[in-house]
Length: 401
Image (cartoon, rainbow, N blue to C red):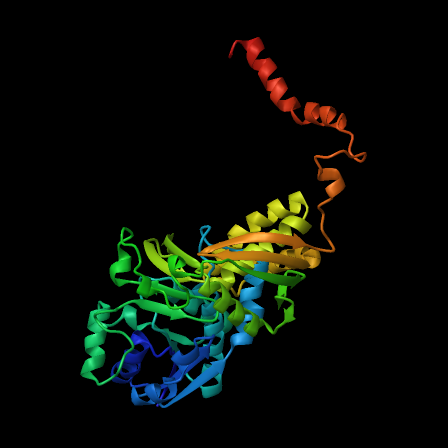
Protein backbone atom coordinates (compact mmCIF):
# COMPACT_ATOMS: atom_id res chain seq x y z
CA UNK A 1 0.00 0.00 0.00
CA UNK A 2 1.49 3.42 -0.91
CA UNK A 3 2.14 5.80 1.95
CA UNK A 4 1.38 9.45 2.57
CA UNK A 5 2.73 11.52 5.46
CA UNK A 6 0.27 14.04 6.85
CA UNK A 7 1.27 17.20 8.71
CA UNK A 8 -0.97 16.49 11.71
CA UNK A 9 -2.05 18.91 14.41
CA UNK A 10 -5.01 17.08 15.90
CA UNK A 11 -7.25 19.96 14.90
CA UNK A 12 -10.44 19.77 12.91
CA UNK A 13 -8.98 19.77 9.42
CA UNK A 14 -6.18 17.26 9.89
CA UNK A 15 -8.43 14.99 11.93
CA UNK A 16 -10.81 14.48 9.01
CA UNK A 17 -8.05 14.38 6.40
CA UNK A 18 -6.87 10.97 7.71
CA UNK A 19 -10.07 9.10 6.78
CA UNK A 20 -10.48 11.21 3.65
CA UNK A 21 -7.04 10.19 2.33
CA UNK A 22 -7.79 6.54 3.01
CA UNK A 23 -11.22 6.72 1.40
CA UNK A 24 -10.19 8.69 -1.68
CA UNK A 25 -6.58 7.66 -2.31
CA UNK A 26 -6.26 4.28 -0.65
CA UNK A 27 -3.15 5.43 1.16
CA UNK A 28 -1.62 4.22 4.39
CA UNK A 29 -1.62 7.45 6.37
CA UNK A 30 1.30 8.29 8.65
CA UNK A 31 0.81 11.32 10.85
CA UNK A 32 3.62 13.72 11.73
CA UNK A 33 3.21 16.33 14.45
CA UNK A 34 5.86 18.93 15.24
CA UNK A 35 6.18 19.91 18.90
CA UNK A 36 6.62 23.65 18.54
CA UNK A 37 5.56 24.38 22.08
CA UNK A 38 1.83 23.65 21.93
CA UNK A 39 1.99 22.14 25.42
CA UNK A 40 -0.99 20.07 26.53
CA UNK A 41 -2.45 20.11 23.01
CA UNK A 42 0.01 17.35 22.10
CA UNK A 43 -1.00 14.96 24.88
CA UNK A 44 -3.95 13.27 23.14
CA UNK A 45 -2.42 13.28 19.64
CA UNK A 46 -1.02 9.75 19.61
CA UNK A 47 -4.28 8.07 20.58
CA UNK A 48 -6.36 10.44 18.50
CA UNK A 49 -4.34 9.94 15.30
CA UNK A 50 -4.59 6.15 15.56
CA UNK A 51 -8.32 6.29 16.29
CA UNK A 52 -8.77 8.53 13.27
CA UNK A 53 -7.17 5.87 11.09
CA UNK A 54 -3.45 6.67 10.95
CA UNK A 55 -1.11 3.65 10.98
CA UNK A 56 1.42 5.49 13.15
CA UNK A 57 2.38 8.97 14.31
CA UNK A 58 5.67 10.77 14.73
CA UNK A 59 5.77 13.56 17.32
CA UNK A 60 8.97 15.50 16.73
CA UNK A 61 10.26 17.82 19.49
CA UNK A 62 11.60 20.73 17.44
CA UNK A 63 11.20 23.51 19.99
CA UNK A 64 14.87 24.39 20.28
CA UNK A 65 15.41 24.17 16.54
CA UNK A 66 12.37 26.38 16.05
CA UNK A 67 13.80 29.05 18.33
CA UNK A 68 17.42 28.95 17.25
CA UNK A 69 17.02 28.41 13.50
CA UNK A 70 13.78 30.27 12.75
CA UNK A 71 12.66 32.65 15.52
CA UNK A 72 16.06 34.12 16.39
CA UNK A 73 17.12 34.88 12.79
CA UNK A 74 13.81 36.65 12.27
CA UNK A 75 14.22 38.52 15.55
CA UNK A 76 17.74 39.64 14.64
CA UNK A 77 16.45 40.83 11.28
CA UNK A 78 13.75 42.88 13.03
CA UNK A 79 11.21 41.43 10.62
CA UNK A 80 7.60 42.43 11.32
CA UNK A 81 5.01 41.92 8.59
CA UNK A 82 2.99 45.05 7.77
CA UNK A 83 4.26 46.70 10.93
CA UNK A 84 2.30 44.44 13.31
CA UNK A 85 2.53 40.69 12.74
CA UNK A 86 5.48 38.93 14.40
CA UNK A 87 5.26 35.97 11.99
CA UNK A 88 4.49 33.24 14.52
CA UNK A 89 2.73 30.95 12.08
CA UNK A 90 4.86 31.93 9.10
CA UNK A 91 8.14 30.92 10.75
CA UNK A 92 6.81 27.53 11.87
CA UNK A 93 5.60 26.29 8.49
CA UNK A 94 8.99 25.76 6.79
CA UNK A 95 10.21 23.79 9.82
CA UNK A 96 7.10 21.58 9.70
CA UNK A 97 7.70 21.07 5.97
CA UNK A 98 11.28 20.06 6.71
CA UNK A 99 10.21 17.44 9.26
CA UNK A 100 7.44 16.26 6.94
CA UNK A 101 10.03 15.59 4.25
CA UNK A 102 12.36 13.80 6.68
CA UNK A 103 9.61 11.41 7.80
CA UNK A 104 8.47 10.84 4.21
CA UNK A 105 11.99 9.86 3.18
CA UNK A 106 12.40 7.62 6.22
CA UNK A 107 9.08 5.86 5.55
CA UNK A 108 9.49 5.64 1.81
CA UNK A 109 6.27 7.62 1.25
CA UNK A 110 5.34 8.81 -2.20
CA UNK A 111 3.33 11.80 -1.01
CA UNK A 112 2.83 14.32 1.75
CA UNK A 113 -0.37 16.11 2.73
CA UNK A 114 -1.44 19.14 4.75
CA UNK A 115 -4.63 20.70 6.07
CA UNK A 116 -4.16 24.25 4.78
CA UNK A 117 -7.08 25.75 2.90
CA UNK A 118 -7.01 26.97 -0.67
CA UNK A 119 -7.63 30.52 0.55
CA UNK A 120 -4.73 30.80 2.94
CA UNK A 121 -1.00 31.40 3.08
CA UNK A 122 -0.07 28.11 4.73
CA UNK A 123 -0.62 26.05 1.58
CA UNK A 124 2.11 28.09 -0.08
CA UNK A 125 4.47 27.85 2.89
CA UNK A 126 4.14 24.09 3.26
CA UNK A 127 4.43 23.35 -0.42
CA UNK A 128 7.34 25.69 -1.14
CA UNK A 129 9.22 24.02 1.71
CA UNK A 130 8.55 20.56 0.28
CA UNK A 131 9.48 21.65 -3.25
CA UNK A 132 12.75 23.15 -2.01
CA UNK A 133 13.74 20.08 0.03
CA UNK A 134 12.21 17.13 -1.87
CA UNK A 135 10.92 18.18 -5.28
CA UNK A 136 9.99 14.59 -6.20
CA UNK A 137 7.34 14.20 -3.49
CA UNK A 138 3.68 14.39 -4.46
CA UNK A 139 1.70 16.97 -2.49
CA UNK A 140 -1.99 16.48 -1.64
CA UNK A 141 -4.04 19.42 -0.41
CA UNK A 142 -7.54 18.10 0.42
CA UNK A 143 -9.08 21.55 0.85
CA UNK A 144 -8.44 22.12 -2.86
CA UNK A 145 -10.12 18.84 -3.82
CA UNK A 146 -12.96 17.83 -1.53
CA UNK A 147 -16.57 18.99 -1.35
CA UNK A 148 -16.27 20.36 2.19
CA UNK A 149 -16.73 24.12 2.03
CA UNK A 150 -16.87 25.32 5.63
CA UNK A 151 -15.80 24.47 9.14
CA UNK A 152 -19.38 23.48 9.88
CA UNK A 153 -19.23 20.97 7.00
CA UNK A 154 -15.97 19.64 8.41
CA UNK A 155 -17.50 19.20 11.86
CA UNK A 156 -20.41 17.26 10.34
CA UNK A 157 -17.95 15.07 8.41
CA UNK A 158 -16.04 14.32 11.61
CA UNK A 159 -19.17 13.57 13.61
CA UNK A 160 -20.39 11.15 10.95
CA UNK A 161 -17.20 9.15 11.37
CA UNK A 162 -17.02 9.38 15.16
CA UNK A 163 -13.93 11.56 15.16
CA UNK A 164 -13.73 13.97 18.13
CA UNK A 165 -12.62 17.48 17.25
CA UNK A 166 -11.51 20.33 19.55
CA UNK A 167 -13.99 22.86 18.18
CA UNK A 168 -17.73 23.22 18.12
CA UNK A 169 -20.17 25.26 16.10
CA UNK A 170 -20.46 27.54 19.13
CA UNK A 171 -16.72 28.36 19.10
CA UNK A 172 -15.43 27.61 15.60
CA UNK A 173 -12.23 29.67 15.73
CA UNK A 174 -9.27 28.52 13.70
CA UNK A 175 -6.28 28.61 16.06
CA UNK A 176 -2.58 27.99 15.64
CA UNK A 177 -0.37 27.73 18.71
CA UNK A 178 3.35 27.41 19.23
CA UNK A 179 6.03 28.65 21.59
CA UNK A 180 6.04 32.07 19.95
CA UNK A 181 2.36 32.88 19.55
CA UNK A 182 -1.29 31.91 19.41
CA UNK A 183 -3.45 33.02 16.49
CA UNK A 184 -7.24 33.26 16.22
CA UNK A 185 -9.25 33.57 13.01
CA UNK A 186 -12.76 32.96 11.78
CA UNK A 187 -16.32 33.18 13.11
CA UNK A 188 -17.21 36.62 14.55
CA UNK A 189 -13.60 37.78 14.06
CA UNK A 190 -14.14 37.80 10.30
CA UNK A 191 -15.95 41.14 10.68
CA UNK A 192 -13.25 43.78 11.39
CA UNK A 193 -15.84 45.89 13.20
CA UNK A 194 -16.26 43.26 15.92
CA UNK A 195 -14.01 43.76 18.92
CA UNK A 196 -12.53 40.44 20.03
CA UNK A 197 -14.22 39.22 23.23
CA UNK A 198 -11.96 38.66 26.23
CA UNK A 199 -12.52 34.92 26.14
CA UNK A 200 -10.68 34.74 22.82
CA UNK A 201 -7.41 35.37 24.69
CA UNK A 202 -5.75 32.27 26.10
CA UNK A 203 -2.14 33.38 26.70
CA UNK A 204 -2.67 37.00 27.68
CA UNK A 205 -4.66 38.63 30.47
CA UNK A 206 -6.94 41.36 29.06
CA UNK A 207 -5.08 44.64 29.75
CA UNK A 208 -7.81 46.14 31.90
CA UNK A 209 -7.64 43.05 34.17
CA UNK A 210 -3.82 43.05 34.37
CA UNK A 211 -2.02 44.06 37.61
CA UNK A 212 -2.33 47.69 38.70
CA UNK A 213 1.42 47.96 39.28
CA UNK A 214 4.01 47.78 36.49
CA UNK A 215 6.41 44.87 36.14
CA UNK A 216 10.03 45.48 35.13
CA UNK A 217 12.13 42.89 33.30
CA UNK A 218 15.64 43.00 31.89
CA UNK A 219 16.78 41.16 28.79
CA UNK A 220 20.46 40.66 28.07
CA UNK A 221 21.61 40.14 24.48
CA UNK A 222 24.81 38.78 22.98
CA UNK A 223 25.32 39.59 19.31
CA UNK A 224 21.60 40.10 18.85
CA UNK A 225 20.50 36.95 20.70
CA UNK A 226 18.64 37.06 24.04
CA UNK A 227 20.63 35.03 26.58
CA UNK A 228 19.49 36.22 30.01
CA UNK A 229 16.16 37.20 31.56
CA UNK A 230 16.35 39.25 34.76
CA UNK A 231 20.01 38.32 35.08
CA UNK A 232 19.46 34.56 34.83
CA UNK A 233 21.08 32.68 31.96
CA UNK A 234 18.41 30.50 30.34
CA UNK A 235 18.22 28.18 27.36
CA UNK A 236 16.25 29.74 24.48
CA UNK A 237 13.07 27.72 24.99
CA UNK A 238 12.87 28.41 28.73
CA UNK A 239 13.61 32.10 28.22
CA UNK A 240 10.66 32.48 25.86
CA UNK A 241 8.37 30.38 28.06
CA UNK A 242 9.17 32.46 31.15
CA UNK A 243 8.82 35.74 29.30
CA UNK A 244 5.50 34.59 27.83
CA UNK A 245 4.18 34.12 31.37
CA UNK A 246 5.45 37.48 32.63
CA UNK A 247 4.36 39.57 29.66
CA UNK A 248 1.08 37.69 29.24
CA UNK A 249 0.13 38.36 32.86
CA UNK A 250 0.61 42.09 32.19
CA UNK A 251 -1.59 42.12 29.10
CA UNK A 252 1.30 42.60 26.67
CA UNK A 253 1.40 41.18 23.16
CA UNK A 254 -2.09 41.44 21.64
CA UNK A 255 -2.17 42.20 17.92
CA UNK A 256 -5.47 42.69 16.11
CA UNK A 257 -5.00 43.32 12.41
CA UNK A 258 -6.39 43.06 8.91
CA UNK A 259 -3.49 41.75 6.84
CA UNK A 260 -2.81 41.24 3.17
CA UNK A 261 -2.56 37.53 2.44
CA UNK A 262 -0.16 36.35 -0.23
CA UNK A 263 -3.04 34.83 -2.23
CA UNK A 264 -4.58 38.24 -2.83
CA UNK A 265 -7.27 38.74 -0.20
CA UNK A 266 -7.35 40.49 3.14
CA UNK A 267 -7.95 38.58 6.36
CA UNK A 268 -8.50 39.54 9.97
CA UNK A 269 -6.55 37.82 12.71
CA UNK A 270 -5.98 38.24 16.43
CA UNK A 271 -2.51 37.23 17.58
CA UNK A 272 -1.10 36.72 21.06
CA UNK A 273 2.69 37.14 21.13
CA UNK A 274 3.74 38.21 24.65
CA UNK A 275 7.42 37.23 24.74
CA UNK A 276 7.91 38.15 21.10
CA UNK A 277 6.57 41.66 21.66
CA UNK A 278 9.05 42.26 24.49
CA UNK A 279 12.02 40.75 22.66
CA UNK A 280 11.42 42.70 19.45
CA UNK A 281 11.09 45.97 21.34
CA UNK A 282 14.16 45.30 23.49
CA UNK A 283 16.24 44.22 20.52
CA UNK A 284 15.26 47.37 18.64
CA UNK A 285 16.26 49.56 21.59
CA UNK A 286 19.67 47.92 21.73
CA UNK A 287 20.19 48.45 18.00
CA UNK A 288 19.33 52.12 18.39
CA UNK A 289 22.15 52.30 20.93
CA UNK A 290 24.77 50.29 19.05
CA UNK A 291 24.25 50.63 15.27
CA UNK A 292 25.36 53.64 13.24
CA UNK A 293 22.74 55.66 11.38
CA UNK A 294 23.31 54.41 7.82
CA UNK A 295 23.52 50.74 8.83
CA UNK A 296 20.41 51.02 11.00
CA UNK A 297 18.41 52.68 8.25
CA UNK A 298 19.46 50.20 5.57
CA UNK A 299 18.68 47.34 7.95
CA UNK A 300 15.14 48.70 8.24
CA UNK A 301 14.75 48.16 4.49
CA UNK A 302 16.07 44.61 4.81
CA UNK A 303 13.73 43.96 7.75
CA UNK A 304 10.67 44.84 5.68
CA UNK A 305 11.74 42.60 2.79
CA UNK A 306 12.76 39.82 5.19
CA UNK A 307 9.32 39.89 6.81
CA UNK A 308 7.64 39.64 3.42
CA UNK A 309 9.88 36.74 2.42
CA UNK A 310 9.06 34.82 5.62
CA UNK A 311 5.35 35.58 5.32
CA UNK A 312 5.37 34.33 1.72
CA UNK A 313 6.97 31.03 2.71
CA UNK A 314 10.21 31.48 0.78
CA UNK A 315 12.35 30.46 3.74
CA UNK A 316 14.57 27.98 1.91
CA UNK A 317 15.93 30.50 -0.57
CA UNK A 318 19.27 32.09 -1.47
CA UNK A 319 17.85 35.53 -0.73
CA UNK A 320 17.02 34.62 2.86
CA UNK A 321 20.50 33.19 3.32
CA UNK A 322 22.00 36.39 1.90
CA UNK A 323 19.84 38.50 4.21
CA UNK A 324 21.02 36.43 7.17
CA UNK A 325 24.66 37.07 6.22
CA UNK A 326 24.02 40.83 6.23
CA UNK A 327 21.99 40.73 9.44
CA UNK A 328 24.58 38.64 11.30
CA UNK A 329 27.27 41.14 10.31
CA UNK A 330 25.23 43.97 11.85
CA UNK A 331 24.73 42.05 15.10
CA UNK A 332 28.40 41.83 16.11
CA UNK A 333 28.02 44.79 18.48
CA UNK A 334 24.35 44.29 19.43
CA UNK A 335 25.33 43.17 22.92
CA UNK A 336 24.00 44.67 26.12
CA UNK A 337 21.03 44.88 28.47
CA UNK A 338 17.62 46.45 28.04
CA UNK A 339 15.14 47.14 30.83
CA UNK A 340 11.47 46.95 29.90
CA UNK A 341 8.39 48.22 31.71
CA UNK A 342 5.22 46.13 31.33
CA UNK A 343 1.94 47.68 32.37
CA UNK A 344 -1.62 46.90 31.30
CA UNK A 345 -0.81 45.99 27.72
CA UNK A 346 1.98 48.53 27.30
CA UNK A 347 5.59 47.54 26.68
CA UNK A 348 7.97 50.48 26.99
CA UNK A 349 11.76 50.80 27.31
CA UNK A 350 13.06 51.62 30.76
CA UNK A 351 16.81 51.83 30.07
CA UNK A 352 19.55 50.31 27.94
CA UNK A 353 23.29 49.85 28.16
CA UNK A 354 26.01 48.25 26.06
CA UNK A 355 29.81 48.04 26.01
CA UNK A 356 29.49 48.95 22.32
CA UNK A 357 27.21 51.94 22.81
CA UNK A 358 27.66 54.68 20.21
CA UNK A 359 25.90 57.15 22.45
CA UNK A 360 28.37 59.74 23.78
CA UNK A 361 26.96 61.82 26.60
CA UNK A 362 29.69 64.44 26.23
CA UNK A 363 28.63 65.03 22.61
CA UNK A 364 24.89 64.90 23.24
CA UNK A 365 24.63 66.91 26.45
CA UNK A 366 22.67 70.15 26.67
CA UNK A 367 24.99 71.18 29.46
CA UNK A 368 28.38 72.82 29.16
CA UNK A 369 30.89 70.81 27.14
CA UNK A 370 34.21 71.33 25.37
CA UNK A 371 34.07 68.49 22.83
CA UNK A 372 31.76 69.78 20.11
CA UNK A 373 32.32 73.08 18.29
CA UNK A 374 28.84 74.30 17.46
CA UNK A 375 30.21 76.73 14.85
CA UNK A 376 31.07 73.72 12.66
CA UNK A 377 27.35 73.19 12.12
CA UNK A 378 27.11 76.30 9.89
CA UNK A 379 29.35 74.84 7.19
CA UNK A 380 27.60 71.50 7.36
CA UNK A 381 24.19 73.12 6.90
CA UNK A 382 25.45 75.24 3.98
CA UNK A 383 26.72 72.19 2.11
CA UNK A 384 23.84 69.89 3.04
CA UNK A 385 21.31 72.53 1.98
CA UNK A 386 23.11 73.61 -1.20
CA UNK A 387 20.79 71.67 -3.59
CA UNK A 388 17.76 73.33 -2.00
CA UNK A 389 19.36 76.77 -2.32
CA UNK A 390 20.33 76.21 -5.97
CA UNK A 391 16.80 75.12 -6.86
CA UNK A 392 15.26 78.10 -5.06
CA UNK A 393 17.58 80.49 -6.96
CA UNK A 394 16.63 78.84 -10.27
CA UNK A 395 12.90 79.17 -9.54
CA UNK A 396 13.31 82.83 -8.65
CA UNK A 397 15.39 83.56 -11.75
CA UNK A 398 13.00 81.74 -14.10
CA UNK A 399 9.90 83.29 -12.58
CA UNK A 400 8.50 80.05 -11.17
CA UNK A 401 8.06 81.74 -7.81
